[in-house]
Length: 418
Image (cartoon, rainbow, N blue to C red; front, side):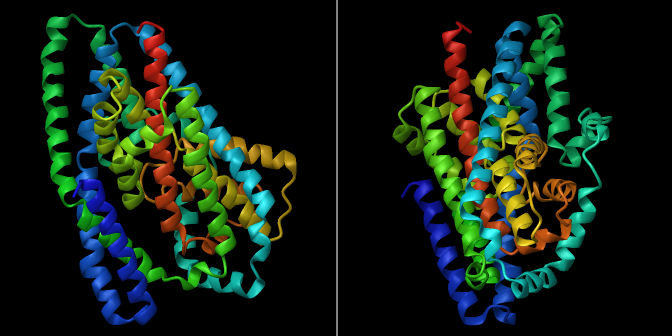
């Protein structure tokens, strides 16, 4: 049985077992003990094994990618194309989210008693998220993109700041004589190869880790919470599916020149890993490996595009944020005009770039936008119960978009003679 089949089997078994446990004894001491001491640790160990190689992998592959490009003109050309593709597709996803929520209007189905119950249930979690969000997205947000201490950025999980340092360091490395830079590049090559081997170790535990994650989510949530807000849940899941397997499929065919069927067959492993971990950062090692070995993307392209994509290219997150903001506005009776919706699309596309590539990384940023359009930040309590499942789905969309982008940029570079 292939690794992908084993992961899917683990996902299925964990989901079924979690639903059964939740139906029989949701909230019981036995189910809580199994979730806390068996299922969640199994999932966390798998997730940590992937996350621990992200920093050395990003540092080595990004610098090797820049070194492989050679001249700065090619780096600038590829960077401009990559960022334009990221921003365009993310803005499209945010717009699709607004269209979906305006058509379905799920917030109007939330009754006052249900709203009060959900707010009370998740009040503490909502309060801590609002506090973490801060007050605005001011100039400090952009200043902080340049790290004072790159090691502190790496330790603190500030992946965007660390990537910016790595980009600057990589460019500087190309400007010094080769006799000085070559020894470091050889070391980075060894680090990149060693981390790939470590990824192989982690993926051997993937079926168990995925089963643990699936059990923990479904056992605690059950299906009860999905019923009353099924319209919102269904709108998000359907919209993400349309974008991931419809819109991105068209991009794969038109921009990358690939058969969508062949593309999706070859990326099943990173899609499954992204869904199970709900983390673009944790999936990055598998994404890089798939791009190079299955899709044939040159290392200098994959090493440049995919680490950036894991933090800057958040199609699924932008869709989720736009549909959720309008859903909560509908639920609280806050009117949002067309001009404000255009602003929301732009804000979600831009702030999705700042969303950490970790589970629920976009929630604090969404609170900021909610409050800026007159919706109370505490309203996120309405969707926190099912957010883990939605997080898994949107992360899979994010990773699919990253792989589409790597193929597209590789094709454009080949056409340009790069």
